[in-house]
Image (cartoon, rainbow, N blue to C red):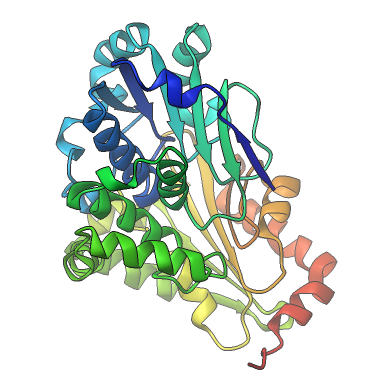
Length: 345
């Protein structure tokens, strides 16, 4: 599904304005990369730009150009509120429902200025005057590149912008291994490298600078792995006690859910993470083939996302959540079995 509703955006951007750019809560590489890439591009057009995040982001993303200037609503709510109140254009990136940006959602709803949405998740809401929504895109960073091309701004992409956009593309495509990374994605990545994205350094900063706490937690996670062979499914757990004893830091569990999919015969991987902040169980779902985890998450666990990558939440105990999850699998055994079959090239 693709929706391009940006008539008048180019004209809006011809005059210097106060622009606020906002990612979703718990911003990942794509959310942060797209916001910072778009921010640098807008600054090149002469706009005054503020990036306001609902909460903090993982330390391993802190190297990104401009990350140190992001206002964090958890710590600088008044600054974020002032920026939104004084803005003349609000840009929301990598989410399509205002509920996804926490405390900033209410401030955006109260604003009367135009809003631009750039996002690749399904079922966008209609809060934005300008909308670029495409579920076929690998990442919001890829969409920022396409929008820049549509607006004839790609000549302005320098190494800072290229590094931000390349980061979001490789994190959301698993280094180009997910089906969403098509030939056009690779062409865009190649152009970003030509424009200054340092793929070697970016990979090292993202994937080769792990904290000891992450390795300890990884061990706990793998030790908890349960393979439900009949259903070609894996689940793993991280408890609050695991996090405390391992010295948990924000972002430490990033990518853990993907471990399960590397197990031979597995097409559905889930991780359950206890979250003391709201007494919930946070869940991440990953799948291969045509098994739709977005639909699974939406139907059963108050969540959603993409066909092969989604998230959800449960507000009962960890044990009860696992019991509910495993009780659902018999309903999906046929599709899980089909998707577990090896594909020939």
